[in-house]
Length: 87
Image 1 (cartoon, rainbow, N blue to C red):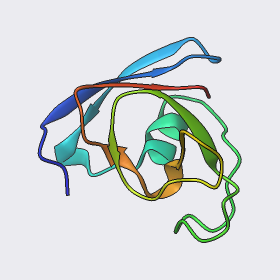
Image 2: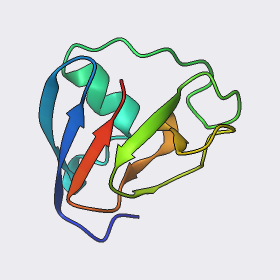
Image 3: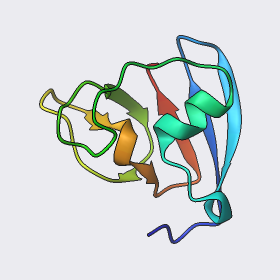
């Protein structure tokens, strides 16, 4: 899925900065959970929209949310080396 090997991901409201590695194959939701965050989610497959989060910087592979500039983090992975989420 990802063309990049790693990305720097910032969760702005949580003030958490982490490195995402393609070889781990984690979604952005799983990455957040791995680093102690507890984002809302429901289905983990992009169907319910509960995990919708504002994308402040960068690009991702995965579904867009219903609101402008939002993504569904449960089924999204970085497509650029710098990602910033409102979470």
